[in-house]
Length: 219
Image 1 (tube, rainbow, N blue to C red):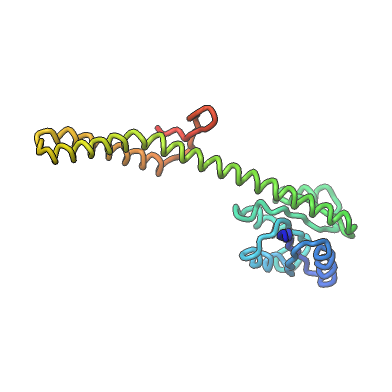
Image 2 (cartoon, rainbow, N blue to C red):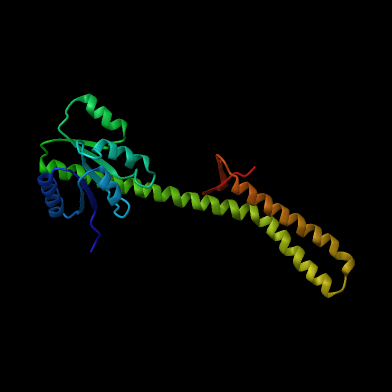
């Protein structure tokens, strides 16, 4: 059984909140409700909706302020935010868009239009999540290529020097070990330098590693 898409309804008017919850639940959404924006923010600490449906005018914290809070939070900003309002002026819509609202619905709301807008919001949320996952995977590959390429040489030198050192000690050729220790010291210094570069990396540039993969450029 597939997981239901989660929707958060934020509406201070009890009857409207009940009707919206019943409609969305009937259309196979998992629904949680809040009376105002402040209560919604508390719910969002443990509940992860794909769409927030919020009334513009509410006590304590209205829908516009809630939208601003959600879109300012990196963890929440991907949520598709629909504002319900009786305001019809272009200026009001622009105000809502300025704080990051994704869509508007003018009251009174036609049920099928509401469901269609919410399903559209769910699709957009899913697409953004997929793109985010792809970008995250690409970044991990680039980091892995960077580490593999840059650490391979000093680690190889270190390994060979240690193997040579063991052989020379076993054969009691102590006069030959100085060169091995020098290579070991240089390899360790190179690894430390690479770690510092990765730790202090700012504005990373991506360069070609192979024909089908890339890596992060280290100065």
